[in-house]
Image 1 (cartoon, rainbow, N blue to C red):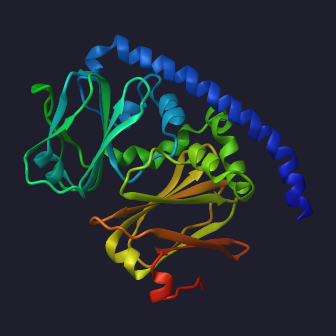
Image 2: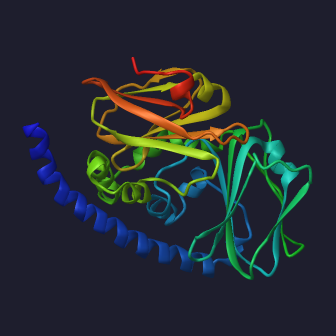
Image 3: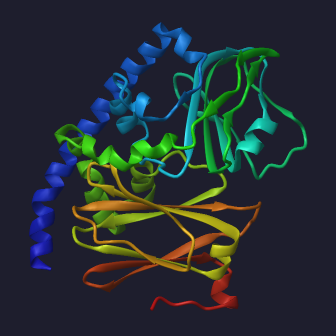
Length: 327
């Protein structure tokens, strides 16, 4: 306990400096990227798919490390915009449904990036074209594909009944760049995200709303998030109830303290244990509904032993119907 307290004493001031550094860099890099998009309007009218080529582009990695640093290693991600809208945006839903069993499209205002609408695969529709009515303004789109098909296409988009961008085919191995992303680690990214590990360690003493805001990505309505810190040399054991295993898709990502991914897996069995993490870091578990459900999910965490953190995920109703306990 004494060593823990001494560790925290020097870590908190460094975490506070990291927090300030992150906020300053997020503001500065965000404004630079907004200016870049405004000046390079041809980029706004093309699907931009997260890939090795995109990561290698000027300014992109710093933008992602300040704008969406909890990398979603399980989805193919396409973005589009900013573009002007007078009344509506329409997309080829048939193409989207044929490209992935599970997907979400988010429409953001620009340049504030406020979420305006979420359209998901769980919102069934028999129409080939699906429209979203919008107030006059500028918008961007973020599209994420999970459980994708062998042939993957980003959809044709129309704005006010005029084609903005046509359908685009995506290579099946587009996400292979995640395997080596940790090699981009440097002092800059570590300084940006150093504070995250600290606030997760101090989570029970901090407002949960603050911790969520700093750590979690922009949430999808059909996704639950479970997360925490993971100390150097520790493993994470994830246990799913039968209901979760049957009715949900569960994805696990481990991050280095710099917030770069070091491990990624879809959990397809009741219990999965990771290899020990090499450096202090954190984890994020995404649990997505396979079909519309109203159950609330919850998790129970414990320390199995000095080398393993354990987390159990279940539906809240299972407490009464089928009591579960960590082993």
